[in-house]
Image 1 (spheres, one colour):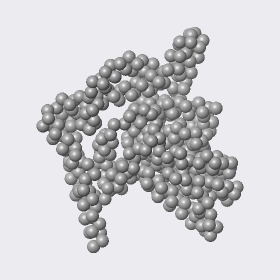
Image 2 (cartoon, one colour):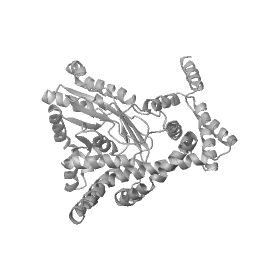
Image 3 (tube, one colour):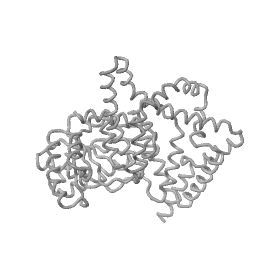
Length: 440
């Protein structure tokens, strides 16, 4: 029961923290088979929390064992929300021995046709890059097959991409790939079980790579992030639905970064110089890229909507201040590693909001009337509305500043921005020249 209650609040808080989420391909998850949901691992534990809050098809979550080391109460809480500990070498030999019981439990779940969520990279690192896929996912599937003759198992790859995981009101793009049937590897398993594990792991890596924004060289991370943000700003994201299952621009972004990876170093350096000049110009003028890209936000209709929504915005800010701001304050003061920042905010916020809501609800039921109860029930809606209002107020103000520029300056800025695009023929020419040199 606690799992379903907390799932509701995690889902709500994630909708508050992130501006827009695209979950495409969820319809590919079969209902009549045991499923291993295999995801990449950029943050500490936002992936299982967020995906688990968005689809009931993710029902059991394998988490790093050290998260269960906070005492019996912490361990009991995590188990009650369907989390399963898996220990690593650095957790000590005593803990590693517990993995046998964990794996047996997972094998039984798969044999019963249950679904398990696993982070296939093993370790988390906040970067736009697919890292080494561990063999644990394949071993989990074959373990259930070997011990319980569980044959109807599929592995569903999930590529999750944060534009800026630690930034409030950024976007998430995730895609669920086609199921990989374990049965495709039975023949290889009969001949050589280790080779079968490798083949399945390699296939999972290929499918995840198709769905993950992958910057090849870590030294290019900063420039790639800026180029991606410019490309993302080219299109307005409609506010509703907050979690969309419609096709997203994820594959455009992946293709763009793949083209970027193939550029010569000299071209990347030229892009970096142009990006620095563009950002310096924006700073000098006191404007932002979203304002340049989306001047349509500066309209009477947007301004009128902001005026109409100002009172509901204030209600949302005031009534939701405690459960939304305390996690932020705590994270700002105590979380030093970016990969934990959003995870702590979303997790802490979901638990705190659950307590906050029910305290107000019970108080209204005892001392209030039906109108107080109805008002309490609308508080989560007011909270999300306040976040949306701030988004549009910021966009309108940024567009206003750009609209007030003189025509010559605006044209100059737009030309500088256009030169940062990776859609032009120069990218293909660069790739061709690079290929010619490699073949000669």
